[in-house]
Image (cartoon, rainbow, N blue to C red; front, side):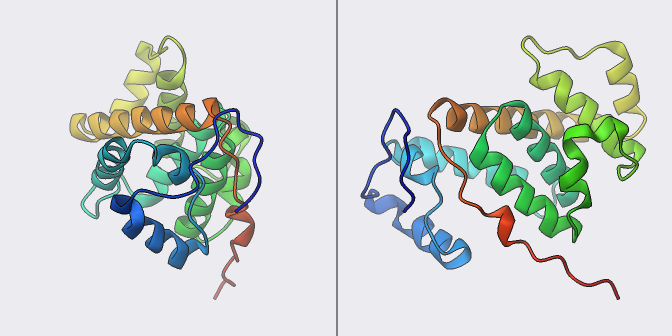
Length: 189
């Protein structure tokens, strides 16, 4: 467990109801993920949030896995959440099979690695994440060119979820764990 200077200390011992998720995290990542040790103070809230993200990340989601990870990474950056940037960047790299999108997402407007659909979604994520939200007619029209109303609704829920998670983690100074540094790009065939 890494030492932290967080002003609200992580819990040292997880409640029994969170032991299964802790075991899964240890198996997959080699350690319990940092946010679990803060969210774990409120196990019911932890499970509600886990169910929410589980729904958004389901196999039959209206948004592709790469797009979901792309949006979550960008929102994490906007919220300055060290842990979320790390974890979502790893997921984006894994899903995209390369680091190019991870490395370009913070300056996506100047990059050529994103599709028109991804750019429309990224613009929407930034507009929704502004305080107050800045979803103007241009952003809406561009989004409607690529997505159905159902997909836009699901995208809005995903962006709102990531704002909740990233703002919680950033406010409590939950540190990154070096997850993205473990990504190994697969050689091209």
